[in-house]
Length: 605
Image (tube, rainbow, N blue to C red; front, side, top):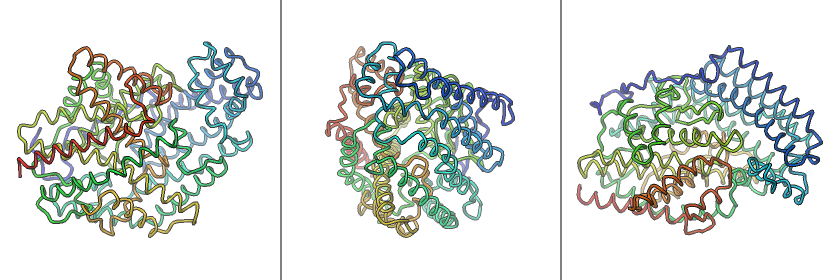
């Protein structure tokens, strides 16, 4: 680690780490983009001409051919769509990237409209006929894809209605998502006119005045755009309300549960288990007051680093070494796959104006490879973020052999490799520290990260539940009503351990998940608790052969992608998602981690 710097954005070596999108296209004006769009359009026309109003007549072999042609078409569409989005993500304010993204969205709508008939006709088949086809060996590769498509049967509309929704797609939620991204990317926060990512980074500063100032700058920037953000949220809520009503989904979360291939009961059990253990959060943050030596914690103090944690800047090269070595201790295959992202410029790491905030791994298409975006500022939290996103990337690479349809995992399993990779890296970082004081600092930071992934995401799920329910029963929400629900659901998590200021009441307005993928957030808690259980099994296994067997089963799980339901994919580990006690296993691990922090605090304080 290099010496820490006084500036808020230290030099890490990540500043010029940019991804090379040439594996997709050479640039925005690459003629191959138009050629691929035309090839995609030709395939869509061919599929429509060959199979429209004939799906019920197809035997298993002919149905396999039809699905393969549609998959090939979507592979091309996925390629141009990924290129458009990845360019936009690093240049949100560039009119050319925005124009290409909108063009591809409209093109995607055109293509979807041409082939919407297939799933409608397939879902309309009588169960007996469908089961006969699905039991044929000739269709085995696409069996899960076809089974999953039929689960939407009660919610599909007529062909004309589905075509109309596809036509309207580019001016519905995706368009409002782009406005949301542009508004926040263009906003300059505070007198230094910093990006949102730079301001949020200061919430992790050891300087309380810096944290308070960052919160004030963030609040002021959000206030300046709150009328636009409030209208955007209300429009997205209404859009989902209308579509859910048309499709006869019983609740706002039903479509997400269906997409995740989960029973409503499983999700309700998860939410209930987590909210019943909110006292764990309050227990920790009351301890944090003592560790920080303050009488009161405010919302801007939540992520304050303890004075025991090293605040040195971790260079990009050091980050790379730590993450890859952590992966290698578990599996050489995971480490070798992760190293490709560094070696072949599949990562964009620097913080820069016009770049979207946060971090993500985009799967792109199986015939190319994923890309990872992070905003690396050089703290230990960022190292774990890199490990997390590379886990996604490794997962996507390993599942690529399954093809475009089967490689895509439901959100609930999408976090399996990312959270596991993050845990491996955390353990490595912990081992590098040479005192109980430093270990206390890092362990506390990890607990706070887990809280953010489990308890905070479920609190945000409760916020979503409140705003969607209100929109459906009462109408549009005012800024004050959004604030009321946000503070109420956050306070339910923190109890009396953290004082939430009125300013914090508008911080719902920058969280992109709420409008990009309504209902998404519980998947984080699902993934974290699942991984905590898996990691517990692995770490408590002492027999070398059993460890090797676990690693192989884990790699097999990643390679399976989304080729089966979460329930069936997890059977080799003896995990029953229908068992309410399953969630408590992960929550018990979190309690044990808090126990360990309390023990370390007793030694240090």
